[in-house]
Image (cartoon, rainbow, N blue to C red; front, side):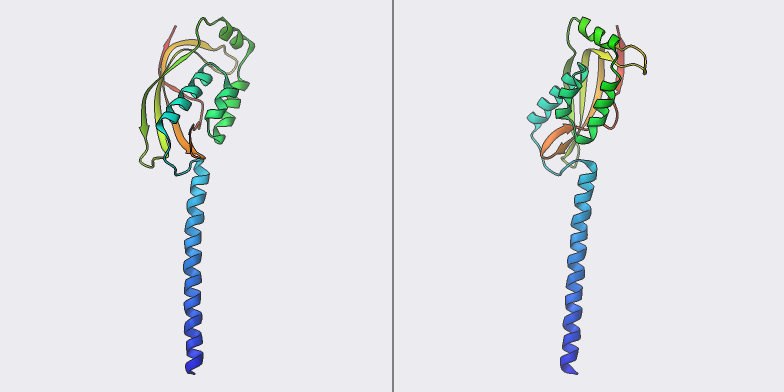
Length: 173
C-alpha cells in the first residue's frame, strides 16, 4: 500500500502542476487577445514620431489625400478613409482645385493615457473643406478643433478612427 499511496500522491501533484500551467497559459492567451482586439500593443512609443505622424495624417486627411493618410492609421481605420473617399463628388474635387491654400494643422495638446499605449490628440485645422451630408457639396471651414484618438500598433503611434473625425466648433466662411 505504501508504494501505491506514493503513486497516487505523485499523480495528484502532476495534475495540479498541469492545471497551474494551463491557467497560466489561459491568462497569457486572454491578455494577448485583448491587445489584438483593441488593435494596440503595450509598447511605449516615441513622442516625436507621434507628433510627426499625427501632423502627416491630419495634413493628408484634411486636404483629402486619403490614400496617403492610410499609412498613419491603424488597420481598423482604413474602412473609414475608404468611406470618406467614396463620398467625394466632382463638385468637391473642383472646390479643392480652386482653393487658394491647402489646409493647415496645428497640434495643440497630446493627452497620453495611463496605459502608455493610447493618447488623445487635440488639433486645430484651418482652411479645409468639410464634407456635408451625402449628396451635398463640401463647404469651406475657416477653423475647427478636433480630438483624434491615437494608439500603438506594431510599436508605432497611429491614428485610430472609430468614425470620421467630428469637430468641436466650426467657423464657416
